[in-house]
Length: 378
Image 1: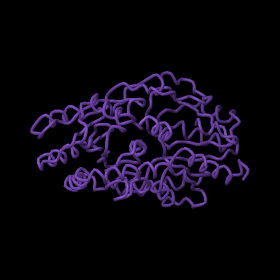
Image 2: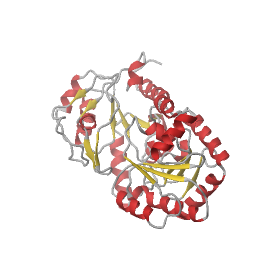
Image 3: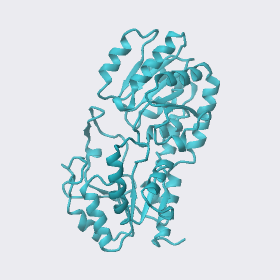
Image 4: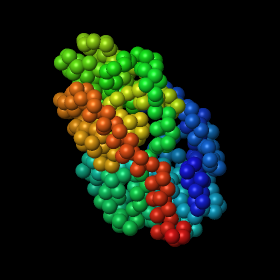
């Protein structure tokens, strides 16, 4: 939003159904109250829908109705409307309001074809979403797999625009770029040692993300005599289970647990690390991979993660394995731990790759959508 509003030709006006990210709310998967410690509204002039102070986030066709969105959209003098997904009733109200006065609607979501769905749901989605998508004027694809999903739903290529799923690369790179002394100090703060690889997992500690597979792979490598430190960043339903498992029969120094880290804390921790691991399944994208790449880390992740085709290149800036396959995970980690020079080269490649996957590319994709719908001059 900030970058869009710094441009000369586009202004973004966010419409918020709730301010839960500002006032803080308990994230059910993190299991703690989360209040982001960066300014989420900087550079914008948002519209808050009545009831925003008490409205909680929920999903479903009847969730978050907010009928007042109809009037807001019709009276805001918009040239186009961007909606995120379709899992709240308020989104559909906004779409209908925009269409009622001839405003083009652009759709953005995270989904892709590799996410597990039952046969009946796949068929229903193809029929229902295909019809719904015909109402929309453009689709802002977050990456290759998302782009292919829209095409599979019958959306013509001329209506799909690449608007990458990105993070604030500039902030992440600046705050994760540590001097040797800063890196050593951060490791001491975390309880990690200098001179050996530091492996980091940073995400919710939930079963879908398989942090326990990483713990088991690390246990096997330690039994082989390999030396490294392992750090878990995050909280969630599996935290107690993981801590207990880490305390039992784990050779050498035990894994480290940093808990939940906020936006201003995470970059330095990533910058003090060497290898980032995300063993998740059913992962639409995985923005933490973008952040780890900004920090110059080699990436180890499962092939099913949505970001993989665009950001993680086998043998170039990371290694891939099948979600749930601990033996494969152990093999790729062994190779990286045994070859720190190669790991460092992969980290440099991560920064090079992610440099072309940022907010600037988002702005260009949005411009292309506006030009295609004749809302912006070429």
